[in-house]
Length: 286
Image (tube, rainbow, N blue to C red; front, side, top):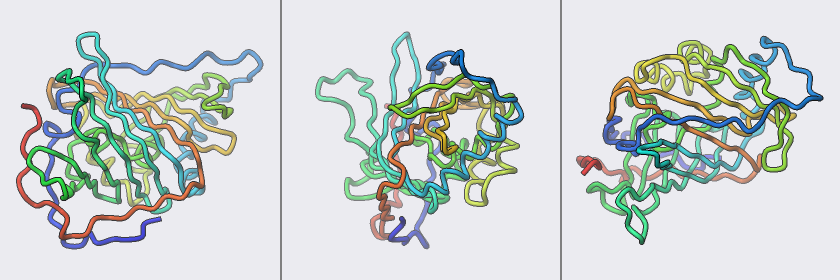
């Protein structure tokens, strides 16, 4: 439930992919499947499987709200690093709040940066404790449609509804088997999602995000692993992207979103206009 909306007139802070939270972390990575198909399961037809995966976004909206865990992972020099987040999301409103923790790339024993609070809202991302010269009591506002990837990974966490809307472009879907995830029976599907098809089928709220993402990656084809429960709700999705730009160019990143606690109370308060920082944001690459 969004209880406050004071975004009107706020000046958006432009954040390029190179200064996003994933800067310096982009490297090739993968997503390991959780298991093989069970022997007593009959594999659904590919067409039926694709339809079920494409409908998962609608089922989340029907569910209303959920608790969320996110991870944006890279591998560099044999070392895996991840930006992790926890919070809640209101699918009906398309808004959520996450506490995002950055890895400490400098090896400091006391830990890295202070956790960043992120508010995900239709068309916008708000970040507090952004660092890089932003006052501690101020928020940075980003127009997500202006980002090269639509903020699918740049902000360090994928908007859960955007991750599900991307699956509207699912194709070549195969059933991998019945499994259990956090004690819940799920069906594991693997396939690819087409960004162009997903943007065409997406809700009006998320279409600009996916249209922007079409231009930010080297290919419109996004491999995924999706886990759906008996109600058709998305419980986990792992999506793999490859950037057209960035450092290094062509780098890949894996985003994982886990959903649980459906129906939990989720209250999202958007920042007041006076609390939004409008100054210059320094690069975090130094």
